[in-house]
Amino acid sequence: MNTEQGSTETEHSTPPPPRRPWVVGVSGASGTPYAAAVIRALLAAGEAVDLVVSRAARLTVLDETGISFRDAHWRQDLTEWIGVEELDGVRYWPAGDFAAGPSSGSYPAKGMLIVPASTGSVAGVALGLSKDLLQRVASVTLKERRPLVVCVRETPLNGVTLKHLVELDAQGAVVLPASPGFYAGGSTAREMVDFVAGRVLDAVGVPHGLYRRWEGELGSGGKVA
Image 1 (cartoon, rainbow, N blue to C red):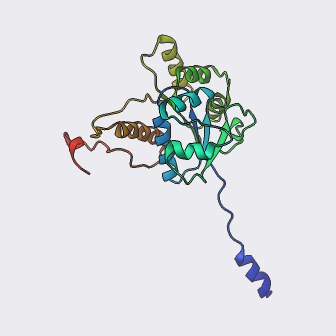
Image 2: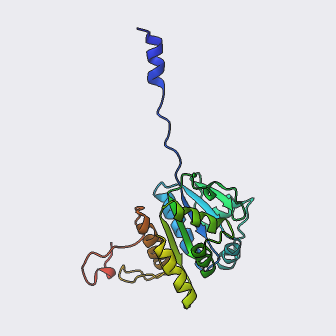
Image 3: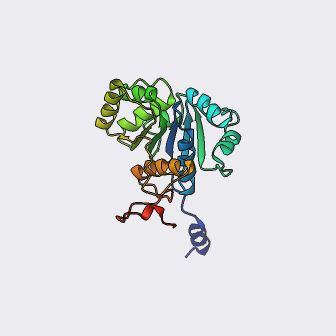
């Protein structure tokens, strides 16, 4: 027996599993706190994240947070935006990069979460326009039969947008309006944001502790956990 060879074979380690991220697309609708909460919760759950921020979303981030989100300094800007310094699980793709990994169906993504979703992005995805990387990745997600959650945040909705949302539902997407529930006992803006973010993660089966779940007991929302 070649003991040296046997020793070498036992020292070989199992290769790590391939990276399979959730793609988070941030469109230009108001509601960047929803996106921040979803990204934080995904990272807390040990999930990898591929981030796509549309050009219009950069203006919204600046308006709602005062942060300029820049391609060349995305780590610094994302840390300031979501309040998380450990970003090893995040990969950023510029919105104009049509050669990005997630633009191909062979890229091993788990699915996509568009948070928040503007009516413009809803229309682009429903019609298959692929005007930017966010819309392209959403189209790829649908054609590959991967989970797609569209967290629409516009009000009121006109008939055209409603038809687009029905079309997305028919194609297999989850249409999830940014509509907070009050039965969980939330009373602050952060708790309302976390409720919506939690429902987004519920739709794709990612565990979290963002809100109190309904347990069939009236009045439980006011109880302290």
